[in-house]
Amino acid sequence: MDTKGTHPPAPPSSAATSVASTENRIIGGDDSDYRLIVDDVSDYAIFLLDPGGFIRSWNEGAKRIKGYERDEVIGRHISIFYPEELIANNWPDTELATARATGRFEDEGWRLRKDGTRFWANIVITRLTDAEGTFLGFSKITRDLSERRRNEEKLRSSEERFRLLVEGVHDYAIFMLDPSGHIVSWNAGAQRIKGYTAAEILGKHFSIFYPNEVVNAGWPAEELRRAVKDGHFEDEGWRLRKDGSRFWANVTITALRDDPSVQVRLAALESLTSHRVDPRQIRNAIRERPQPGNEPLMVRLAELEKSL
Image 1 (cartoon, rainbow, N blue to C red):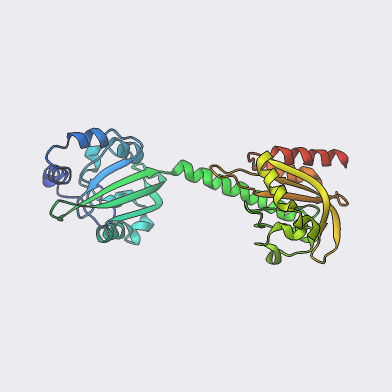
Image 2: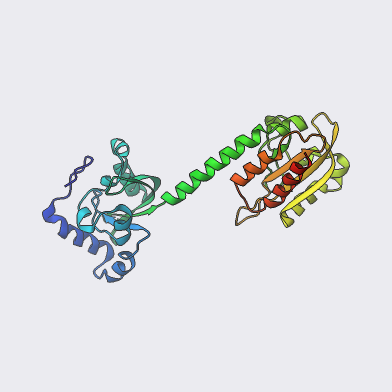
């Protein structure tokens, strides 16, 4: 039998008695409803632990996620599910001690299947007591979040490629706005065209680029309103640099919507007097990181490409 970690298995002679005793005390005399609800759940590993962290029940989800049959795992310590580096840091016992002291413990991290492969898990350990307050053990629920983690890693990688490309573009001002119009990112082109460094401009409202008569007319807010309503907004007009000088700009604001809220996340500004960069660079970057509402910006970049 596996003796991984510092916890030997519970004595075989007492295992069956301990399982029945623990389950009956936690669930009550008639556990038929509990078993109907829990045993057939396949998307979550749900099982009981005694006060020392030894496994006392096992459901279908635990078998599917972790790979162990019930008779392979009953009586063994939960440390068999943890990588060596977590065991070396005494993490399984830390989880149990925290759950016992506070009533509940939740974490995400790497766990092991029977075959030794790792999966990214969300775990919740809950302290269990009887009606008199006597400590009986723990329940533990594990979810396999490996697919979510892979998707998040892909998104982060795509966003990083997008960021690096956009930051390197010098002939277009490309920056992101939050839903209220405050600037949350800034590229080299924006600094060159408008004269502000990122440190000077991040957090400022984008109306800072508009002449007073345009601001007083409420035009910046109207641009955002139309972008959110229609998915994009395009305009030409005077804009201001940091030094107060004016330049004639073509402005495209595209609303990138992240459900369930609508967020204005991208504004692309381009001076009509400077078309030196190949718009295909930006189109390719946006194509690598597709978002609902990108199409108008893609069309505009295609038009610029034809004009070169």
